[in-house]
Length: 421
Image: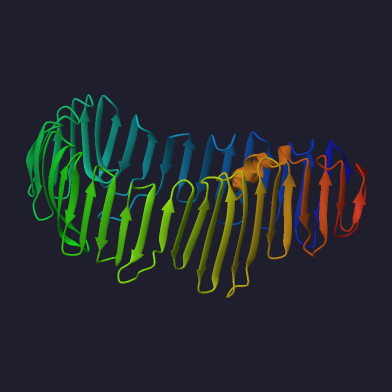
């Protein structure tokens, strides 16, 4: 049944699908054997999984607010504010696993667990938090007046951050009065000293895979890196750079970097990367290859890796794009073409679909929230493919449409055992 633009109802008992919509694209409901889906565009999107396991999701003014409720996990997000709750960890858990947490980054932080306790922070006034963004423990009082960061075997204290600091702990020692003078050491991994940073710096560092490397910086004249597997010389900041990396087996020259740059494999005479930015650049590093012309006017990307293949051409970054990908092993094939703000066209395993105009969805054609909540609102002309392979289309949010190989008028009524109009 179709009473455009007030109401539309369709039912397929064979597939267990019920669909109805009201006021064009504004309200839409779908029920299948697996889930229920309600969309009140652009305000609300509700999804509910049917079955024994709970999995409910909602979005309010996507991407402003989102929630998810499962049997053992709940989360709420509002812009940068996040809250989540999960079951208590097993008693033998070593790393902190928080049962409750929320962030209003970068101001409010809260963590709670029956194993490690409760911690909170309200910056810039006070913070006391373990397992904090890569640090074992972070503590701050009237930041930046006082900050203490704890890493494995090293503790750094700032008063105030970042100008005056000390390095201590079992493996740390040193003092810094930035940017005038500093000398620090992390025993067994790094030694650093500077005078009038960044003009005079000396550093010895144990780099994974490269061994001990020495770095010397004397700006603006030159800088150097010397190690058993890598050597670099840099003159006039970036006027001329030369790097030889034995570990990754390449030689690179920039003059000036990064605008004029070329790179080749050791022992080869032909350069696999050559760039004269922003006019032209190419890179051939299997399985990847790329080109650009008058960046960002036109770019080309290719990937050929065993059974997987990918191609993309774009202009002005995302204003126009054409991309293809296919997998010879699985047989999956997909084509995507977008032109902002005019058109988005997709072909995936024989199914063709898209719409005109295409505003947000031409810029983010893979974003589920944009495709579900925003694209239908301005999709004056849309097309799709039925399961049997027949093409469908509609104009004016269903004012005129073609479905099941026939035209459907604005007011339409049809009924059978398996389908509703």
